[in-house]
Length: 105
Length: 232
Image (cartoon, rainbow over the protein chains, first blue to last red):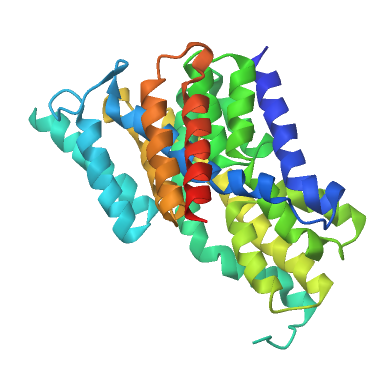
């Protein structure tokens, strides 16, 4: 499967998800068995995207600031995200910690 | 506390104005995505085109990340669609309002639906009754975001070509997801879903076909449902 085919398929699928009720299904309410799982998609997917990216180095859990500065930087970024919910502030804080650790270690 | 309906012609600017503060979060996200697309194996053109073809930031980032990691095509598609499944909820919530729109608008406007456009529209729609005003309000909010996203993506691609790898700018990706994660945790069940999703994704990171993210996400959803059931 080519990269372009993958991307177009996702594009069409995403449009159909958005169109679903407003264009096709109509105003019937969504049943609970569909609604309840959907509520948990955002927290679980986002955590599943973040955790491996910051905790793993070459496929192994590494929390040492000397070898994996991203773990500590992510912790700082998490606190900034909690306090400010500001995308730019979180990126600046997280990147600053990584750069600082890379410079001093 | 219904407000008097505003003249429908003000809808577009009202929508654009209400979404404006949220655009401050969209710009750095788009820049980061552009930088990632510039360095991706799919190349800047195809990577950047996802902003038009998908127009869904988190799914766009995950798609390029998975393709770069060599994940199987079907897994990339399934993962991206799971990430975007929340649009089903938005679509269901907006359906009673969109039902009053002409057919063309009902099929065209979902393309520019986003978390932000949904959030501001569903609040405003509670206060107004005029379908034309609603249609223009949604269009104004969603289109402002679409234009902002395209401009920041292209800018990011242009910048990305200049950024050396030693800057570790790819680390900005999990940082963006982190900012989205915090407001997504609104209950104890959400927290359980996040903790389980993250933990299992780490444990399953070596899974074949790039399935680790999907395994983590599904485990998180199941954990959230179980916690929710126990609480009610």
